[in-house]
Image 1 (tube, rainbow, N blue to C red):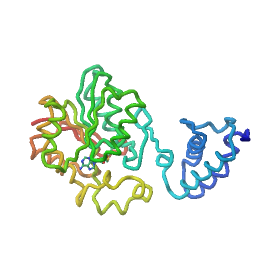
Image 2 (tube, rainbow, N blue to C red):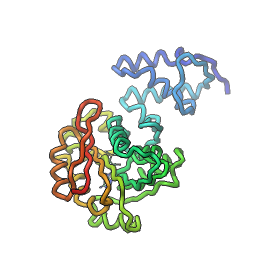
Image 3 (tube, rainbow, N blue to C red):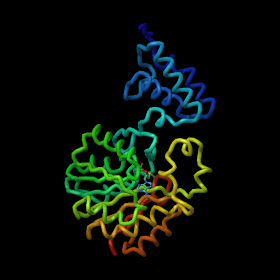
Image 4 (cartoon, rainbow, N blue to C red):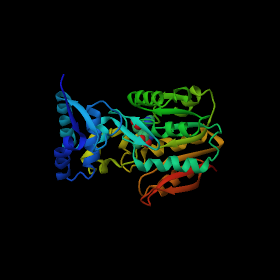
Length: 295
Ligand SMILES: C[S@@+](CC[C@H](N)C(=O)[O-])C[C@H]1O[C@@H](n2cnc3c(N)ncnc32)[C@H](O)[C@@H]1O
């Protein structure tokens, strides 16, 4: 096979222009990430780095650029996304982790300052595992259970845990919070040991709103990871009534919510024996995380 010796910028320049022309502001970075993927490298290349590239790798790069031109997000093309301090692999049943969800991690770190303490953590609706695994990475003595309705997403959590060296402290639970007695089933699996920390970023987008979302989100994120039912609150209505049973008396619950959902979610929680401890806004000033404790 013959290889061409070329600098990255010369190779990507025409593709950067194509992406810029359709309004993609991150065109240069996107091209470098897609080129890395074509060369089977894990990190983005530098613009002025020299590379050796074969004709088939160039063809591969151009096909990835075409996917980007068709509106597929880079994270979905390369099946990877950076979250908090690590890189997570994704598949078609995992949500593409959002920077707003890092507010959950930030909030927990503020609440639990001693990184060496033991926390038993539950990540409800774990997706790629980005939340629970980031916490395991921050709290090296702690353990986490990852709970999701999608077996394929749990496979991804397993892979991410392995990649990050966190497998020994991770447990994978394929259950649905819509199933009667899910709390009892969970406690049986956990040998009746309750949690110190429950974290959840459940689906919270009202069904009607999903069709108005950007095509990139609508087409690439799994519906089940987005859909919160008619008013966006279905998951909270299933989850909150059961938390009292599975949390330790000193435990804390950290919930991500959508814009403007705080009053409704606080009301449901209060009806089920929980009280609001604090809330936290994301970088755009939207109330994003609610912390609940036992009343
Ligand atoms: C918004 S995503 C969050 C994923 C991940 N925690 C994150 O923050 O990127 C919601 C997750 O809830 C899961 N889910 C949806 N309905 C569920 C149910 N009834 N029981 C358990 N998990 C469910 C989805 O599969 C999805 O992984």
